[in-house]
Image (cartoon, rainbow, N blue to C red; front, side, top):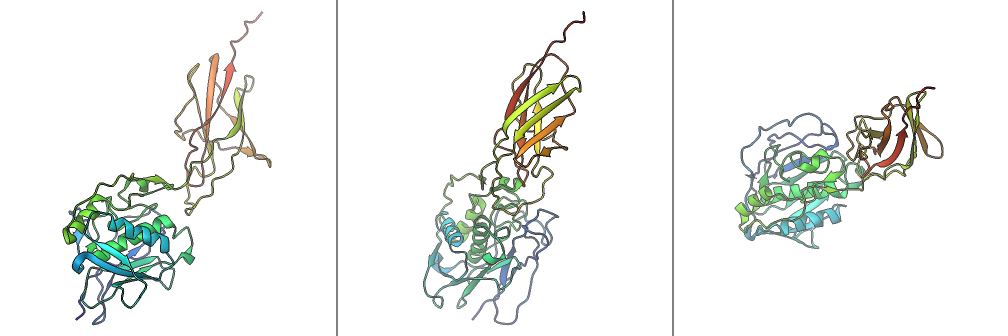
Length: 351
């Protein structure tokens, strides 16, 4: 006898975000999936169900014995293996076991037929029913589906298979309904385009699984945010030449080679720009990029040399230091600035 299970469906609104929850009825005998859409922009607010007060939410029945055999027919092999390992080592008494027989598997993982970014999975255990989990295929583009995002999505969908449903939007948990910048929207990594939530499962996620299956929450030493790619290099061959007559400072540097971005390049007001900071008289070089002083009239030569003229030049005699940072397409500053010093001489007394 097949059990009917409740569903939470997510519609695609903007890329890199999944949002919304609603109930859907299926034909008699069908088991509804619990859907999870991955979108690419962080826009708007969560649509659908109101925020829930609990740290985890139980929505389905536990699998007998906590053992779930699965057959992975999708083209996401490594990310699914990683997501399986995340749950198998969480401390909850659950075990996803890969099998070679599709017919004998408790769970079958497949590709969606279309690039609709609506991933889904059945919610919990139903006697006599083979659960299904669907993932958006790789052909839909690395910007929409990369190993970082698909591992998080797979871990989320496996959580539904275990019987967990969505928690409140603002929670830092894999079972939150919104993914932003390769991290649940409530996690620190969601604030930076170049990081991902490398811990994957949070304590609240595991607490929910422990509630269903027993066990204990194991300490996870992984940080909550990891860099996906290195920071861009600082400018090379920086030189700063003051001109007392025009009261301007001319800076030149060579543009570093850009870092290939794995993620979809989101628009940023700092994309491809450079910023600078000027020290006080006889003070150390500025070490923090505030991005408050950005170049607007940069001139780039074919060989990669940039000439920039600042409209401001100190008039107090002394030694000064200018720091220059570059920014990549996602707005990330170089790990360190390039620095150059110049001297404003003491005026010569008139004869």
